[in-house]
Length: 528
Image (cartoon, rainbow, N blue to C red; front, side, top):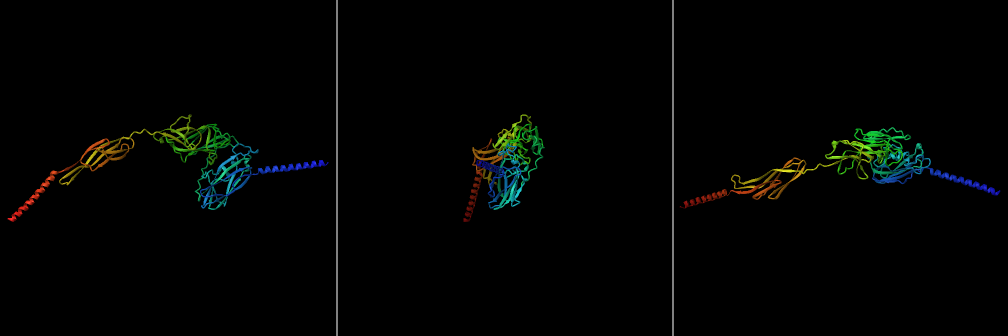
């Protein structure tokens, strides 16, 4: 009997222990299922003007209807007033552990598409943004320069501002996000106060295509060719074009043709719904220089794909499983002299050079149009042509009309005693450019084989110019002049009128003798 009672008591002990163990297990499971939404650094972020800070976040184990608030403290540790620019980087959305209730277990995770964030500050009124809040993290600015902006202004020297991140997973989300993990980095840059004028709002997106998805089988994306929109239907999960479409620009000068069953995806995406929502052709703001042997004809274009109809999240790049046809037009009258072999090329920023696209063999070549095949979009695109310089002919010059003018000088113009000729000589000639291009000519003056002067002339086609040389201090003698193909002579002489000089001397002597004779005769007369 005692053994039986002991057995009963032992059974009750085991039962109570089992209940306690079950309660512990249930408690651990419930504890593990509680939201552990944010893993973040709670220390204040110290900033100085021109400096950056960052906070990494991971969000996991949250359920529909969960919400919460996370605070981050920003401190201006410098001595200058500033304003904070906020942007998001390093976004990763994964499936995590794929718990049983989840219906979509293919990467990437869906939490990024459903988890909403809102922002506020203490002191109040410091938040300045053109982003519509609350929104998902992929609509936050991806860089300090946008698109879009979130500013905390001002953040004065020594001041602290508390930033509240309010998050919520809507109750209507369903099971697809369970077990997903969303991680990202929040970056802060303290700029010099005051902030610049807010950028203008982005242009309104074009009207979306009629979309049968996501529960049907047909979705669509827009091709915006310089403002003209063409809707292209695709399979919502297959990402394949459901019918051949031609997308022209407003002037029917450029167009893209995408054939039926072409796979169109953002290359950095895999799986259902990876087709771009918009593909935009636009004028490029800047262009790399063309190759050395080519020039760019006409505008340079960007072809950019976006994941969203608002054109905030760009694809990198848009890819096709089979090449699509691209046709760009140009004005043949704008081609430079000697231009030939026009091609379409894109600039590969990774390789650092232009890559030519293959011609489309299915199209007949036309003057002013180039058709190529493209299997992805890497901007910018441009029309390049080779330029062969016309053969250069040597510049030909001719010389003519050689003039040699020797100076003439006399001592006493009334009666010439001495005459000098050629002491200073002026030599001139006409030089003509007989070729069809501008050229330079060096005129070299030689006298008796010695270079006495040079002149440099630049003459256009058919132009003539006179060159002038002056040669001084020439000794008496005979001189030979050579100027290019021309030659001539001049003589330098010194002539003295000895007869006149002798006559003057004789007259002076005779005059002196007459004066002496008369004085002598007068004295003799007085003496007698």
